[in-house]
Image (cartoon, rainbow, N blue to C red; front, top):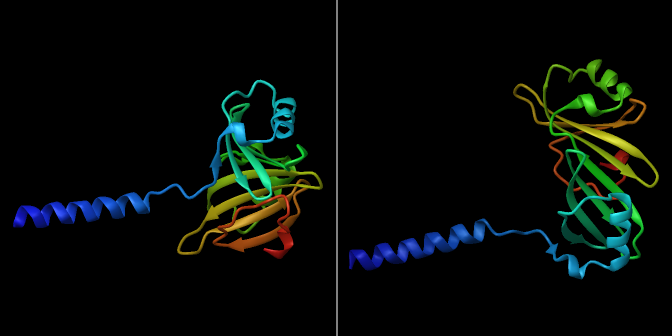
Length: 169
């Protein structure tokens, strides 16, 4: 009886573990990506061979390594490019000098830099520096290319898309 109970408990635990580890993104195979999107991707990033795709409606998003950095490129179904995110991990030295200087002069310059990303869109380019402070919530700092602080958001945890309005966050 104890063995039966133990097996049942293990089965339930395994089921819960499987549910909690489920992959909740929208990965798709390259065969389901429109050829126009594939062509634009190849044209913009020649030599990239390992690409994972997902669909974040209405966009097709390619996740890949390019020039040593993890990138995500967003495309419309007609093949037009909408945005590229480049992840620099926690290294601000890849950001424009004006952004580095603005951050160094900010009240957050002594905080721990957790993540650094740059977003290039058809109509703007900006960088996000995520910092962790002592006994404070994490802060995401949004900078324009010329070092202007566009927004400062606590506990930022949303996906930036080609349509995200930075000032409205």
